[in-house]
Image 1 (cartoon, rainbow, N blue to C red):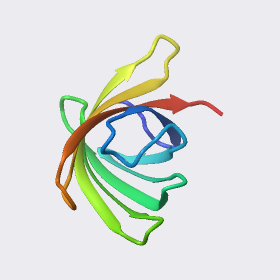
Image 2: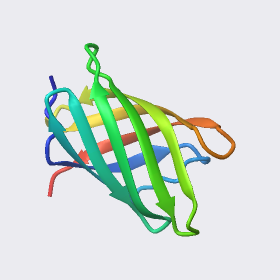
Image 3: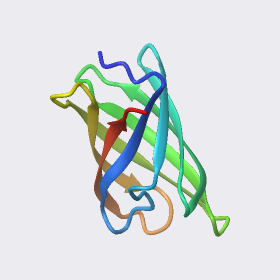
Length: 114
């Protein structure tokens, strides 16, 4: 099982209908098969996520955030991990809004080593 505890990630690619950009920083924590995190950027005041690590290694995730306009937004996501040559984690994500237009998209985030 991949260890996500106290890891930071940054978005590198996102669909146009997403709120995440390359200035978004995610901070993940983990206990057993439970992963949770926080995130924000210039358009997102504060966001949280909660995921369960599936037997396949994928993260089955729910996310929500409050944007700068004061609107709540949320959705679901399946994140498929990839271990890069340098040992960092890359997550390939398929997500769908459960609020608003309920559109879907894809994104990729990568571990940032500070």
